[in-house]
Length: 94
Image 1 (cartoon, helix red, strand yellow):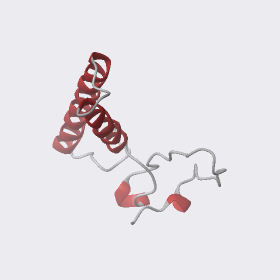
Image 2 (cartoon, one colour):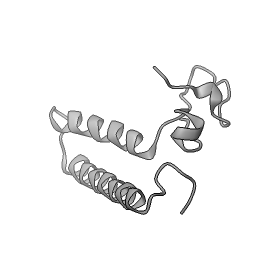
Image 3 (cartoon, rainbow, N blue to C red):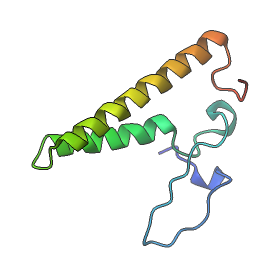
Image 4 (cartoon, one colour):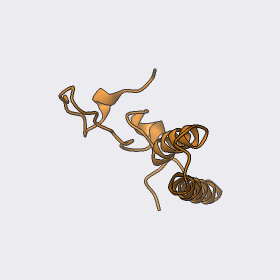
């Protein structure tokens, strides 16, 4: 899958009764893909909420949560576009 968790400094063997989420550590072009990005995790949660909204668990609380997750995704995309414009995307520069 190209997902190298062993290369992530936060990686530890986890017991099977829970899942460890490893976030990307370092720029992908330097460290490779070694964890999840904020954007990927938000997309997973948004997809799950959309499934709830399409079925018997649809409710106002889920709709509001989904709206705010989508807003968060929008602002992270804006941040990426701004970093690209400044030529610092994919680096640890501010």
